[in-house]
Length: 162
Ligand SMILES: [Zn+2]
Image (cartoon, rainbow, N blue to C red; front, side, top):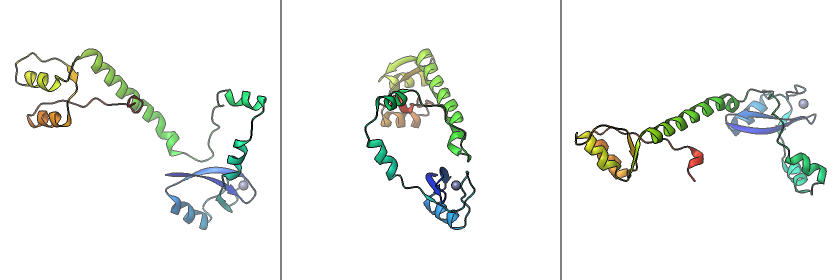
């Protein structure tokens, strides 16, 4: 999906989603893209340059004060936006992954790089079964799974990669 800033022949600007740039060209040609303000089907991609030019201009103290305030809540979009519909689910999924990670790290023993060794001991009945977590190299992980040892990767959240 691609979002375009669009402008109609009466100067209204708005945004809309398209599958790709060819889809926009096709739909615009067949007059299927219309301005949500006036309904005009004379729509083209907005040129963004004027906005960039004004952004470079120095700000007055008043404008700076306004810019420092938290942005106002976004107005409801005129057209349905798939991303806005998905994000609550994504947030929920992300919270669940975090919960799982926290649960495992709180309730399991961190055996660090001894993970393959400890996992094997448990698998072959040398030690009692308990929850453990640690690290394993890709090769170690492969060996463990070849031996039929059941383990899982802990989900890593995007903001924890740094
Ligand atoms: Zn318009």
